[in-house]
Length: 162
Image 1 (cartoon, rainbow, N blue to C red):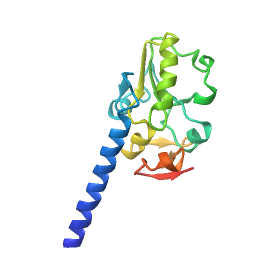
Image 2 (cartoon, rainbow, N blue to C red; image 1 turned 90 degrees about the vertical axis):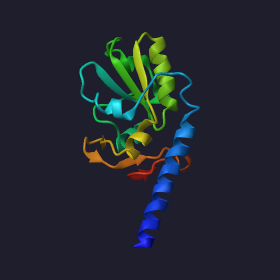
Image 3 (tube, rainbow, N blue to C red; image 1 turned 180 degrees about the horizontal axis):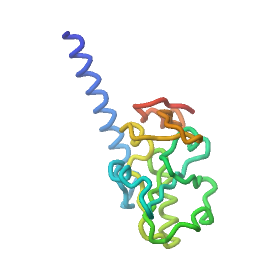
């Protein structure tokens, strides 16, 4: 019983330490750009005039993404991909942690989109908090593309693939 309790305490400490380290790592990424928490964003899925844009590579998107998210691809982004979105819509951009999506968010704001927010912590934080994701076929999945071994270490829940 003592060993079980010790294991519980150690695993909780590791999880807390991982979360604290992840939060600290994220501090330098957002430099004042508006963010939205995963909790608030999860309530907005399928709402009218709210659009999720996945800015990752197609390989990452195909493994998992937020249901109803439109893939816009950071490397090949063009405003043509969002020309049908209303300028007054709420746009929630995301990538693995939030760096690529913030760059796309800045481009959207410059193009006249008024309500653009970056998903705080990105899809890694979403997955770690066990919010639902779907794959390219629209099926529920716990897999997530880790981007690289260096970045994939921040995914603590689910199945990391490369």
